[in-house]
Amino acid sequence: MPIYVQHEVLGRIPDVFNAESIWQAPGLALFARRPLLRDLLERCPREQRGRAATRCFSHVALALPQEEVDDDYHLTRGARARELAATLASLHQKDFGDLLGSDEVRYDVMGSEHLAAGEIEVRFGHAVYLPAGGEKALFMVSASRDSAVWKPVCPVYANQRLVLIGGENGPASCTVQGWPFGGDGAILLLNDGPDAPPVLHMRPKDVFDCSFDAANGYYVIKSARGGIGPQGQTPRLLLKITPTAAATRSAASGGAARPGNTPDASGDMARQSGPRVADGNADGVAPERTAARAAVWQARARLPDLPEERTAAPLPSSQRPAPVTPESDATYAPKAQQRLVLAALALPRLSRYRDTGATALQIPFDGQLALAPVPGNGNLLTITVSASDEMFAITEAGRQRINAPASFSPVEGRSIELLPATGALADRYCALLALPHAASAAIAGGARFTFGRGMPALSALRVLDSPRYLRCGETSAAPGQNGSSPDRIGLSRNAFSFEASAKGLLIGRLSSSQALYHLDEKLQAVARIDEATGDAPYLLPPGHHLVAGHYVLRYEA
Image (cartoon, rainbow, N blue to C red):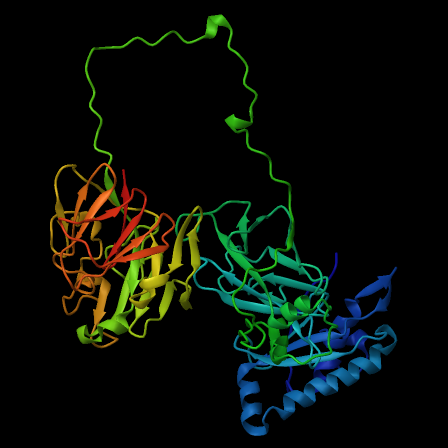
């Protein structure tokens, strides 16, 4: 069995910065009561022939108690930690030089809050890699539980062959915050260089189901053993592998980047081998793009037995259905087919409404991705617009800034789309939030109705007519504390009149301060409706959308 990550905790070290006390116990190793670092490297060789070791691991990550590391930084600016790494590398080269070949010995020292005084955590193995100075990162790996908030996991460097991704309690070289699968499983990532996509292997193979979501550019990893997650779903993890800017430039120029030749500010991410999750690095992370699809080693999916895939055969005469006879002579009249559907919510630019004191608009969704009645910690996902027109996604995993276009799948089989506001809408709105559960209301033909704040017509579609969704005044104030409704922002009392006709929906603009917009079937801007009266109404074709205030209404007929 290959040693992907050898993880040991050495205890009772009198001085954690003394390299000799970490490397080998004084006297004969045969009589040593406990193994130290040299003994571990000797017992766990990288390669061996029979019982004789032929190669030794050369990259070792050490974790010391965080308090000791902080004191060293305060007093000597980290000199003792650097001296410890250099001395251990020298001892390593001296004792195992014949088993290293051309490999460079590298040590890294970091702090850990999980270690007690006198303890040192040691990690080495095939999946433990420490980058050389100036080595570039080819990929950045990030993980999410809900597709809204992404946490950085680790970079993958040019010369790094293997990465073992798992939970904090498992034998992993890189840990994932909120790992949902316990300590048994892990994800093995194989890097074949800048000209080949990374490959994912699941360890053990029969524990996980892994598939690539090409539409969103990430991998969906689920437990094959089932289980129930926080939202009643099977536990899952989303993994995104994004090429760095350096890798993208190398691919565009047509030349493969030679590992270790150019500087990279994310060199500090070498500490990914330690017990703590590595921090993100803006210099090593490319802008959001579609991630390169990596190969996934898994069982081939079984084709479903769909009716359209079957071959039709005539039934024998004995099995043919009997002709259907009418049950009565009743006459059926068709129901009215005209409807208005709340297809999306238009997120306003609150900076245009500073006079109202609005500081945040919060749109919460429950476990079924339906609009929740009250914003709070119990919601699955909350989309927020700040006073400076910044959008954020808030989940149990944290808060992260978002931009349109974006897609969120916090639960299996359901998603929420955030679409950019194009054309004339960009002046008033940040984005359009497509609703997975669209409310609708029937329209009676031959009559003209009025839509607006407080009007009874289509009141079921004005889902934001509550002060709970708007925060005003101080940022610490609770939503709805001042009793102001979001409908007071951008929606007049008499916004527009509408009447269903054979050609479409006839729109009349009733307020000069009410902005109305016409969108097509794909929610793309068509025109701003400035001139529309009862005598000369604006015609909205079936399938098209009308934007009034926060509401994007689709006319169906």
